[in-house]
Image 1 (cartoon, rainbow, N blue to C red):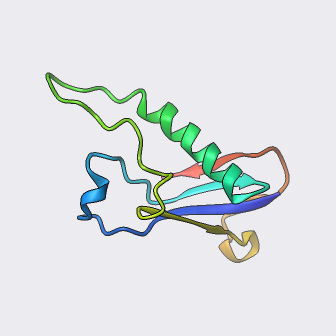
Image 2: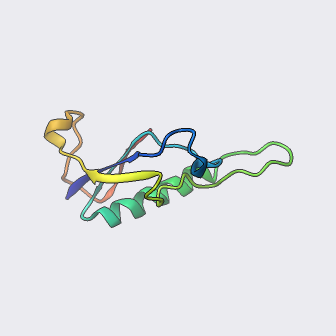
Amino acid sequence: MKLWKIEPVADTDDPRWLDHHMWQEVVVRAETSGEALNLARVMDEMKMSDVATVGNESQALTSGLGDEKLYRIKPLNAAEDGRGFSTEGEAKVLAAA
């Protein structure tokens, strides 16, 4: 399988962020970029559903990973990266920070 890196491309003060959580990097093992993005979205929704709110506020429950103006997805070369990510195994999110 291939490795994919999803990272923000919009500036931190870009109004499209609204109240979205900003992932600095998401690494996914998947056959296609579309599959990688879907796996990242599922992970994002699961993590963000645990976010507590206080009082009368509302929380954006996703990070906007599907917005190409906020994030880009590109292939990740495991050998050049050097963090030990493997192309072997099931499709899944390997890292999110």
